[in-house]
Length: 291
Image 1: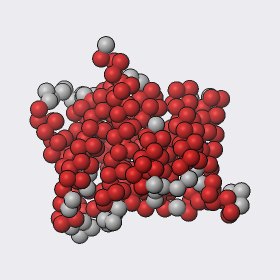
Image 2 (image 1 turned 90 degrees about the vertical axis):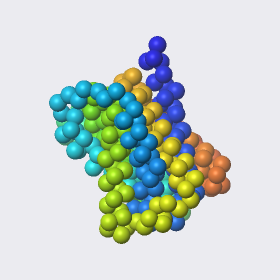
Image 3 (image 1 turned 180 degrees about the vertical axis):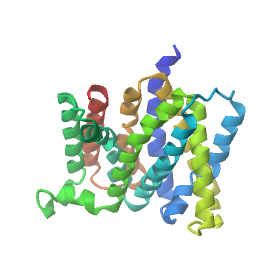
């Protein structure tokens, strides 16, 4: 019975992901890069610590800590580029780019493992590429390749594409960690490690100030609660169902990102961007389910 909760939890992850981006862009887009990265961890880190303290500690099977040593740094870099993409470019342009995560996984498998994608998987990749073209259709004045040039020219979309690549790796590593402990402990422990590292390092190096990290406390608290709930929903959902199914629903965050960009920021070209996000989400779903 509890297995049936994977779908609403996955959908909640997608909505929370887009909501967190909306809060950060609205309140904190004027901050420096490391300040933007550290903001969600000011209040989420204590929440993750509390979750660890209150939960029954699981048995940690061999391999958990080596995986932690790989996953936490990679996730930190992914979060840095993910959150700062929202600082540099509209949400309706950047959030759909996370749909490239499963496409990168297919390409990596082909290059390094010789794994050929299925015909449906190839169609999924074409849909994602087509969506990324449509989402930048306003750049057609630069020629037929203008929309693709815009992706490379826009720093925010480049940041998000790199985050998508890292997240594709981290989702697999996180699943492996969950199998060696528990879903909630895995998510909480990773983000406690990331939270301490990001906040302490950014303060010590002078890349963030205490004043900036504590500014707008209610918005900071909201961002912290949202990332806390997002990670819990993500890890519990992925423990209940095959990772492919969970990630396919989570990638609907591109659609929610476009909608939130329209609702809260009145971003332009929403019709074409919504159609593009829908194409990219459909492509991501096809890849993860039929690769």
